[in-house]
Length: 233
Image (cartoon, rainbow, N blue to C red; front, side, top):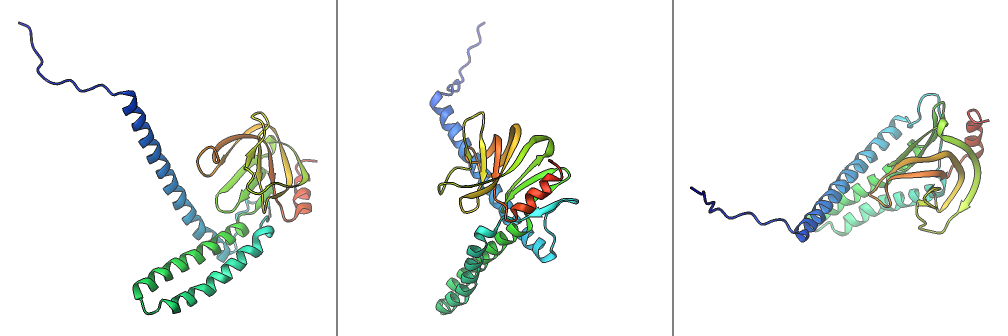
């Protein structure tokens, strides 16, 4: 006796359905990455403020720290002062409306805290030169470890690039990472070969990139090069 299956077969997935699912998955993944990054930034703000209060910059044992914030320090301080003055002024204006007043007060204090934390991050997370290599930093997120075995040369090289120039530039076999302050760099680190570095944000701006050169800004250029010469004659 032949068995007859009266059930209805599930329709096969079409290419359009698969593509739609991939797009939705990509959006969910990007949203998740954005949320995690925002959380890390928020925690980084308070960690930087804590380090500043404790006067404990993130400098490994045996290493020397070198600041890089001078091109933006004055701008940040001006914004912090203006924000601090703005909070009581706005509070006075919206005083008759408690709901609006409380919301704007919270927003103003949060924004002021963020700017103070960003300044503290610049101060407490300097570039470092130590026994194990150079750590290149910028603000809250970027922290690139370059061991001495990966470094071929470190040289003075003052450059000013066009505004909004990409961080990663150059041909595929000689990519350059430029961590500019006000569009300028003054140190060039040549690597022994393409070395993978990881940047915040999603590709193509962020993610993993193989670079052969790293350019950065250092306030105390002579001190930085002097520290490097202890490890690279």
